[in-house]
Structure formats: C-alpha cells, structure tokens
Length: 288
Image (cartoon, rainbow, N blue to C red):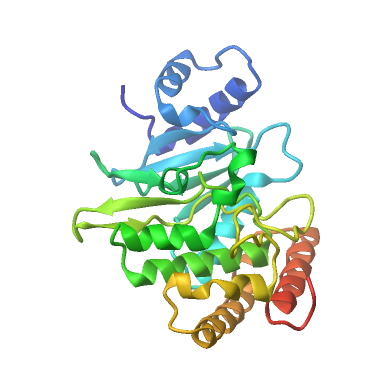
C-alpha cells in the first residue's frame, strides 16, 4: 500500500494523534495506510509521506504528553546543526498541521522508489537500546572505529566528533545508539555516516552528561572528555582535535541567531544560556 502524499499532511497528523491517544480512526483509509507501515511504531507516533518530487519524509507530530513543543525543538536542533556546517537531515516545521505542530524529516534511506541499506549504531556496537546494562558499549570513539572498519572515509569520523560536540552544546542527551546510523552509498560504493537525525535539545533541563561516552568511561560534558580519545576519530594529534573543536564551537555560536527566530522569547533565552554555559565548559573557561 502506498504512502500518503505530502498534501495529506494535516490528515496524517490528525490520525497519528488519534493513534497515540488510542482513539478510533478519524479517517479510516488514512489509518489503514498508516498501520501497514513500520514507521508508525517507536517511542513517538510517526509516519512516512511522499513529497511532491518523489522524496520521502518522516512526519512526527506533537503529542499530548509533551512537556514542550518537541517538533519545534527538533526542527531548531536540526537546522542549527546544519547551519554550523554539520551534515544534518533536512527538516520542515508545520506549526498547525492537523491542529498541532509537526516536524517532517527527509528520509536518507529512500530515494524515490529505491531503498538504501542502513545499519544502526546499536548493531555496529553490538548493543541495544533500551539496554541500560550495556551502556559500557555506548561510545562515540568506538563508533568512530567502527566507521573506519566498514570503510567510511575519514571525514565521517570527524563529522561524528562534530556531532558529539554539537549534542553537548545544545543539550541533546537523547543521543542513544538507535539515533545514529550508517547508510550504503551506491554511487560511492562504500558505507557513509548517515545524516544526523532526532537531535532534540533536552526540553526540561541542561544536561551535564550525554547518553553515549565521549571518551573511555566518560559521559560527562567537558573539554577533557571530548579530547581524551580524539585520536580514535582520526585526528593526527590532540592539538589538531582541539583546533577543530574550538573552530566548531565558534560556528555553533555564530549560527544560533539564524535559528533562534523559530523560538519564543523564553526558549531563545533558555537555549542561549545553555549554549553559553556549555561552550564555556568546552573551551575550558568554566568547569562542568
């Protein structure tokens, strides 16, 4: 059964909300199409829609239990990462689709009718999520080494380092092993780090830790933790890694204003203060 089309976004969001709240179908034909797709499962209701040019988008609406406008925070996180020069999945924000806000994320595992092979970081690291007893295997440096072993280019390991830093700055501590993946590029005939997805600043507090180790045994957000295993990301020396880190932090700060307009005054202040604090921590000007 085909996916709904982008012009049906309002109906899809309305039906996803009904599904999440265990209500009867609002539009039975849409419900029937949604429940036959794997994307409807997971922690949040979501569905795939086909765009005007044959591309596919993953749609995720706001739900009643959200403590903040999560679709908006995800859109801001994704846009901010991309503006900082990192490879983040393209998103679009819909403030009132089907009566609530929704974010759509361009799927990297599908190009028109063609599907691309993908492997999650959970599989690469031989662990699982949820899996609180296995977090010793959740490691950015280990994931970087797996990228090397599968033949991904050096720039993908540097990109992973940059995403780790960005997550630390924006406070995305939902960076678990199911929120990273590799995708096979037929044109390049090699595995590549997939575009970043599900980057959502913590909506409740400024976290002091990430979900995945920044270096051996270190989950804490600090300059020392970021740089301790930098050689495993492919940097020639810690000096080179520190130079990349400081330049990236400057780009993250400089690009904040380009996305802040999406937020209300309270959230602009919250994320600005979080960014300022975490950048000070990561530059060594302030202890974690």
